[in-house]
Image 1 (tube, helix red, strand yellow):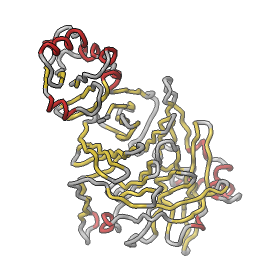
Image 2 (cartoon, one colour; image 1 turned 45 degrees about the horizontal axis):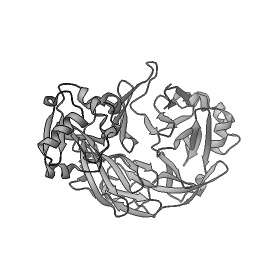
Image 3 (spheres, one colour; image 1 turned 90 degrees about the horizontal axis):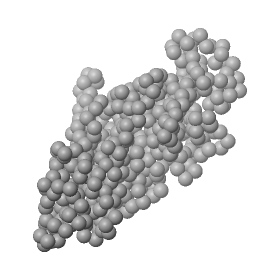
Image 4 (tube, helix red, strand yellow; image 1 turned 60 degrees about the vertical axis):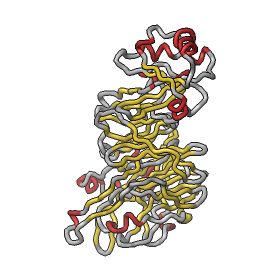
Length: 442
């Protein structure tokens, strides 16, 4: 449907030709405010220059027009099954095929596991595939170049020394290589990371032989890596001694914001009721040193099942914010404050048998997917009752502006969906196609 504004110039209506010529089976509606029949005929013939007005359903109604009037210019509204898919100014419309969806076919020789994670950085799609042991950087330029950096590529004396902070670590690693190989730990392991856009961070794990309480086995030193581009990366060491007693690095989520590093951490005591899931670090040389805990504690929704499985305690960093998969609680590093997403009808409960822990079950109709930060608004992409929704939150007052169900292309999704920008989502299909779709509701 196109809402026709009476304030536009003649050039602003020129995109009508794309709309008129697209798919004769498409229901095409033109919405006008109340105008005379003579004015309507001139708009249809002299201004919009329609070839056949019978191809359109014409509505003239002030009440309907004003209910749709989001701006002073003409707008195109796309619906499917009575669900609003997108809104865009008519003068920007150049056809559904070019505007609604972009499909990027990746090389058939490229393998990506279902366990991979993907980050939308400024110039690259950054994929960490810890199961297949490789980083994949996909150039966003038209040539779509693909760069692969494997765990084998990173396994060398320099990186092992940086991660462990021990100049003798590589000699010990080489000495025990056969033992590491027996448990598939003979190269640096990659760990997935859910960093914010613009930051291509991930984690690296270096194996070592460690003795604890008389038991000798294989453990891992955790380090971090940041890619500036496919040929330039930096490796960081964690000063584990600086961590508070009872905490360890959870190699899952890392970001940097305003010169500070924020990393997900976990307590050693799984029964603890009160703990901080995020720690702040400062960078000194190539070492990340614990500085303190932001005032954000693990929300109560997770506590009844804290003894059992991981249950999605995954932190996603987006700019200055941190979100959890199964909680409305989120944290703002700029204000050092915790907020609750203003969403209704959300059920976040854990149901488990206290005797047979294998029967544990998460009864949640809500799952956080991604967020996008604008100057005034916070957009939240989430899944509720097996449908995807996009909510807009007023950042200043944490007020719900809108909450709409959106339709995603009906194909099996391997990774995503996530925000590509404030008007588009992207995801990776099972066929390794990167799909970018319009999803603006302005």
